[in-house]
Image 1 (tube, chains in turn blue, yellow):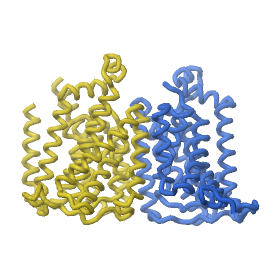
Image 2 (cartoon, helix red, strand yellow):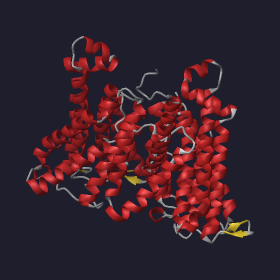
Image 3 (tube, each protein chain N blue to C red):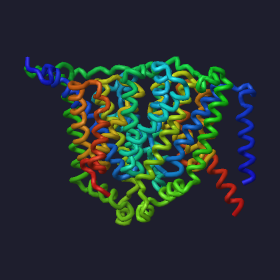
Image 4 (cartoon, chains in turn red, green):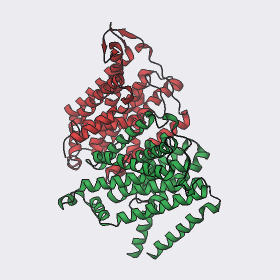
Length: 295
Length: 309
């Protein structure tokens, strides 16, 4: 059997596959974070909590309301996005005039509330969500078995990332969004409803996090704390890619997921911290991040 | 000024007689440890306007080091505390050197991410006891002269350390060095153009704050007899921010008051409402950020200033 670093090749490919799946989640989450940061200047600490709420929305839908996976893919991001819009209207909006760190602190408080509520209602232990029947099983590629659901996660999130990128960089709506990011006052003066744009952007970013949560539900345990450490990894991914950079967020997420998978093969003890080490190195070498612009 | 002296006199008297008022001494010591932590944190947030989101790394890191030195190496209490503080200093120097390269929100995210790295190291390293943490850290004595096993003796020891730290922070803030920190808080680019090596001052403040946070963590390890993952976790980093904000960042007394309020709330509420306590803490966070950004002491200062005007 072929080996690499003294590890059989199928095992390495399996870990890389897992890494790519994690990378898909990182990409979806950091994309939403980057879009929100670009327009609102808010680092959304609650992003991990919204990811968790997305997964719980799918779980609750299936357990109590008979909503299947495919409907959950649509409904969970919509309902969590709506919650995000309410939070933006009620709370975040009041902080645009003060320093950006207060936005971070506010969303941290919101994350505490969301996690606390879910923990009180559902307990701290994880719950499993079944893989939908259509996506069960795997392809035999000859050298390894590729689980269909994992392939689906990668495909779905890469597609969503590409569509989002296209929306922002190539459409009229996206050009308005980018203009508002550059200079909100001027865009407002041109008669574009910037507050509405801001509200929808926050809702959409949060919706992306919830979508990642639904996609993640069948591969990890659904638990109230599933997002709390993930959000910090995603922060690191965004810092590495360069804050506010869409391409940096997507590419950074996928690549760092792969690197994490590879580290699990070579030196498993470091797999949790490799992203943070890379972040430190990148910051020393390029303080603005790989795709970021120096201010 | 006279009012200030009166407040300090009342607080000092309260602190001295507190163990005789029927309050549980271990709880009082826990309050003091977190008060030291919040005051140390305030040196950074309040006087230099640098929001570190990873101060649990120094607090918890020191708690582990002190605990390990006592349990595994058989060190005396004071030596173990000094060891813990030195470890926090070193950690603060390394993380600070990376983090001060960026400002504001970036600084917060970088300190958070690097603190998470410390968290995972504590989770996986051999000497920290993994998920269980370090248990059975004995209190020992002050160089073999005075035993610290008695709750009241230890209480006065911790109180003395708190007073010393408090005085030290006042001294630092009112020194020429502290003036430069406040100037950086007011207008950083201007300080750069005046020729101050701003990054060096910020790093210095960061290391000081990290070391004193470490001192708080070391004391906490001796007081409660254990060091766990929740000491280094992000929730702890968040809570020290809440203590400082709630009490009043940039005031001397505020963070200590905030620490007393938050720790007391957690202690008593968790018995009554269980897991809902984090919901309440989160809600206080939201309210504090939205409408109470000056904090208790900051609001009092503002009222007095208005009346004087």
